[in-house]
Length: 298
Length: 305
Ligand SMILES: Nc1ncnc2c1ncn2[C@@H]1O[C@H](COP(=O)(O)OP(=O)(O)O)[C@@H](O)[C@H]1O
Ligand SMILES: [Mg+2]
Image 1: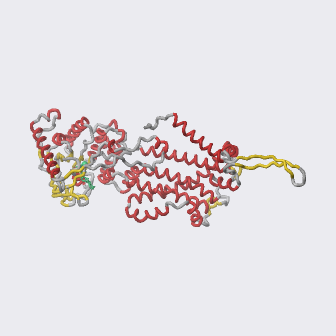
Image 2: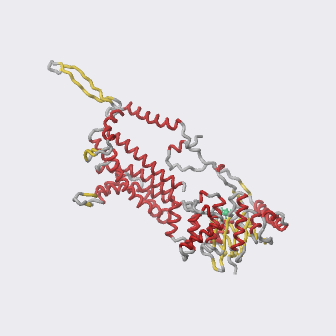
Image 3: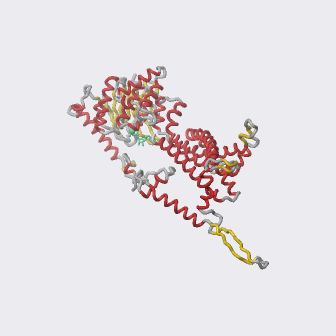
């Protein structure tokens, strides 16, 4: 039995080995360019030299790790550069995506938490709405986005210079992120409220706390650890959804970048995007876990 | 008129009778102790008095009026402390004081809180969270919170059962000192005969029966206060009371067991784990599932009549 906190050499070494093995596997199946120079008859009797560049390999078009690195370097070494609307440093794209995610995520929390409380507190509310929630929950962002476009069609809030500051596609994007990301918050909050120990509720009864005070002094603090688990899972989903949303509406951001690079046949940049999306998602999750563990011990 | 009264009260949970024919009268200033085996229905009984439960039949009354719900005039010290873990000692008591004395000024309430924290000798720990306190300290906070509400009657449900013997003795002495000063009416539930006799004016056994527990005959304790712990077990009155009490309880237990078959059930030894907590690093180093045998208290005994 291993004790947590006691870091063995393996705990440092094995993750590296894992990453190396994956990169090795990637290198194996990826293609590489071969340049072949042949001398042949051009059909008129003259001998000409033809230089052909061809990609060979198991998955010929998949860029090799080294190629990916070379092609991605400008985006990584200048992460905040802005060379054009769709040609920006990788962290600049990430920042744009994060801004949108945070807005949609906050909306999800704002809507999801009260719904969770109602589900946790009222049996009738649960009976009425639980089936709908269970049906809406597995619907993909790809399905919500068009609905959002329809719902908010014609919406246009102009900024001072008359350009659209917030239009249909922005509203649809927020709507999609919020509705996809809110379910873990809804469900975990409901579970947390139902799990409030009877002892605490008895204290509220003996003290004759008002409904409002019972909510703020007992229910919310007691269910906070559960709520935070929900918040963390919701953030994960919001980040998952952003890529799909940006692809569909063509907003600049990490997902938009990925899609545009696919269309431009810059396959190396797809891999760069995927790695970035994964890393950012991982960091977000760690940050939320930190916050969560602070409340868990409380 | 008695302060608290149960008249031919009974309580059943989904048709299963736990308490029956309960008649209990508590006068102002009484110190009554109710003693019984665990699982007999002591918590249920005190919940009836607190108003947290309604009797299935019969009545629970305070000063002649039916008890319709809990209230701060009946302060409760729960078996498992019931302190709010996210509030400090001070804040836990403040919550109660703010609620019960809204007419007092903020400064008066602060003063009031400090007085009761001092009464249980916890001034040095007033800004600590419950998890930073020992079991004995937590229970003192719980007592202070109940006393700070200045209740007409104090209901204590096995307040010291979870503590080690030494801490328990200290707290018994402290609480009886406080009681000598305040003379609040007290109903003290316990499973310890020595504790019951040492503290109470009147000890009432709660006896398990096949179809619901009933109260046995009350025994009054004619021992002078303050009672000296070190000498009391030499006291012939104490010895006799203790002997009578234990034999009453034992014979009730024997009768109940004779009239039923007891089977021990084997229950799965593994508790569920929360697998929604996705943390691969921790999971790989986890200590394995928690086993019941590692839990502090686990009794499984199914009695088939
Ligand atoms: N809310 C409840 N619903 C069903 N059964 C209960 C409930 N509360 C207590 N009981 C049962 O009543 C019996 C007495 O419980 P309790 O009053 O807690 O005993 P004690 O406090 O003496 O240990 C137990 O067998 C318990 O399972
Ligand atoms: Mg009990």
